[in-house]
Image (tube, rainbow, N blue to C red):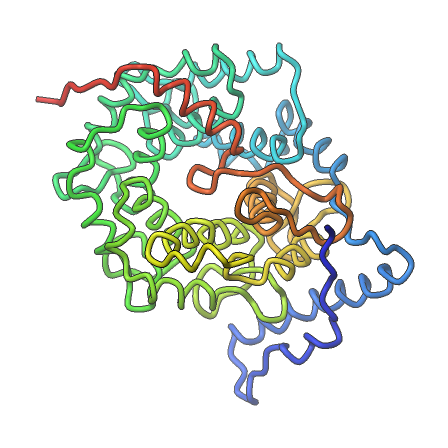
Length: 406
């Protein structure tokens, strides 16, 4: 059943007020709200003649994404060390849109990702580069999204586990690469790939839960490393990593919940990444994707949570922000109005839209036309639910390497 849109006249009272004490931050916030209000006002006129509005521009997005598989503009040169990420962002977005690729194209992508796999284990940002946890996570997610026998078998699981050992710290944290930076992304990426391809061992992640908890801040969210500021991307990594460890009870859940529900912007409807920051389409997932995990945790703590009929954020408001403010008319999605489209924001904004559209057991609540509905995702890994379950089932049949480094 399609959900009704909010009354934009009613929510205008939620516009930011600087109390006659302007700052650079408040001025930027008001500029964003002005651009959003213009789009809301335009939409209010459109919906009077098109009751199916807002509409997800499926064909435009799919065309943009498929073109990006073979051609990217010069602006993407800075991501030469992130090429598995480019594959993942595109493939996952197409998956959400229920778009398929030709068999030969799938095989070409698998072979390219195979060239990014390093002899010492793990994946690099491109052929001939050094292994790194971030592109390792992206490559494994991309291969599991493709879901073919060729894609699964190209992952060298024993060498991958050896690489994870090489970047593990005694305190349970993980370096992004040997000798590299240590932050909460590392432990999440390591856990996600270890669980997906069945190379997880308790020894490999000994002390990891305690280190993650040391990153929870006074605000309630998680920071990249102990003592830093709570941040949406890091907060998702922290909560998802604890879920993969089965140690969610160690988190101060009340504090986390208070922090994250206050990251949804009252006027725009989208999420900000940090306190006093601007709305950003990618946090539709980094913040919104945490709510299915929170629901499961609350169910474990209190069986009454089963009766909840929605996630603990305003799902319709997020859908409106994405559909009205984040779609580029030529395809692709954006951070916020006036920003250019890119495949990173396309991926995570669509992921957040999928979360906002669905609830427990896939129950749907769709803003706009029913054709706006996206595929379900697995919120822990951020790949399609079906792809995640197929990969977990496939790799569960394989033995778990037990060798530890000397």
